[in-house]
Length: 178
Image 1 (cartoon, rainbow, N blue to C red):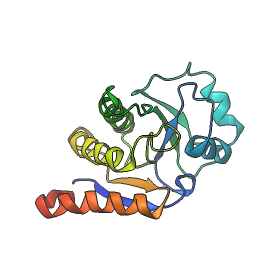
Image 2: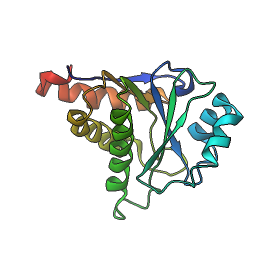
Image 3: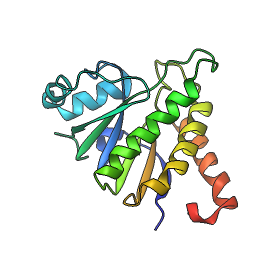
Image 4: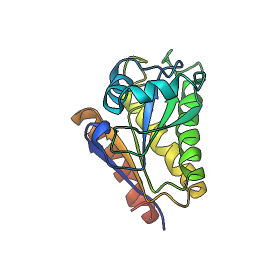
C-alpha cells in the first residue's frame, strides 16, 4: 500500500497524526513561526527535552515526544536559509524531508505532517520549496513502508494551492500516488 499524499490548510499543532515536523532553528530551543507555535502548544516539557539534544545541523532531524500536542512525536529539522539557490539550499532542504521520513520509518509511524520548511523567516520561495518537498517525499516513500499518510500542512491558502497543484500534476501521470 502506498501512502496518501495530501495538502491541508491548517494549524499543524492541531493535527492528530503520529508525528509533526518542526521547521526548527539549529538550537532546537524554539523561535518564531511554526517552531514557536509547536513549542507553545507542546508545553515546557518539549523545551526541556530539546535542551538534551545538543542542537541540530541544517539538513538533519531529531526526535522528541509530542507532550501536549495531539501528535505523539515531533521531528525537528533545520532547513536552509535562502541565499538565492546557488548555495546548496535544495539539497539541504531535500535532506530535511528524507531525514524526517527516515525517523518516521524507523519508528514505523503511519502518519506524518510537514510544514513549509524554510519558507518563513529563512526566505525560501514557497513554489521552489514545495517542489523540493513533494519530490523528496515521493522519492523517499519506497523506504517508508509503514507510512499511510503524508500531509503537507500549509500556513496560507496560496501555499495550499501550490501544493495541491504539485500533487495533482503527478496523479495524472502516475496512478500509484492516489
